[in-house]
Length: 306
Image (cartoon, rainbow, N blue to C red; front, side, top):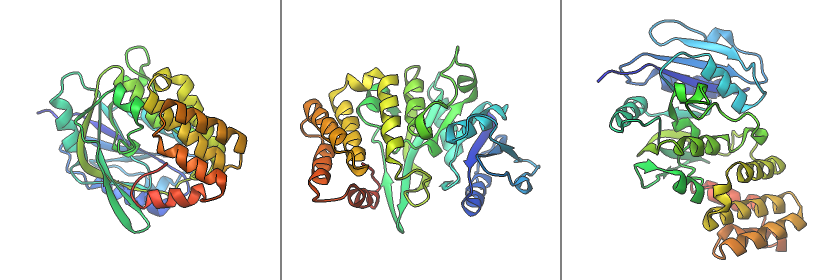
């Protein structure tokens, strides 16, 4: 088969050691085709010494678009001219065969534009595998569940679909509050055109929790979920999916100390799906029986979030 050119976008901010680890994992890919990397520095001075030439060049750019993760990703996308674009967060790493296997999988599905893979979650020295249990993922799947195992560091996307909103699905949404849930939004927009091709084997390792820039920014979490609900009415129309989001809103409101909103979102979660477990977590937090952070840490150790 013909191996298309791939450009890797690594957004980064003040994490030089983790960044070098991510770059080493990209350099170790056994992909036979052309491969280059763009490191997009966000809200920090670029380290141009990382730039290199050769068969697998590395280019260093400063984020010249909206400050934040989404703007940095788009800076990298627009700085490339490759056929495909792959995302890798600066605190994550890839298995050596990640790109080769994803390109092969895309070639088996004519018209496919987007590929993902399962992941390993590393948290507190423990590693947990998260699988989707599927080889194709559609809008219905993504509405019902965020499907966190389809992590942004697993994304491989046809670049033309990103840079042309008229013939594709467009760039990463830079108006996403705090650049949160922009990956879920991109998956949904892409899945409306063609199912996501998924390799249900962990070809990405994600360093969870400890390195997040916004792990406990509850107001931003709330704003980004409400942004998603307004942008994708299909979520509201799916009772289990809506209940999941309402439950998350209830938990983050409780963690932020906003009892009134926490009660309101809890009631909406129960109305949509009385079995929604996040509603129970929010109620426990409101009663003072447990802290949301305590539950979150316990879930992270199992490779899950709220």
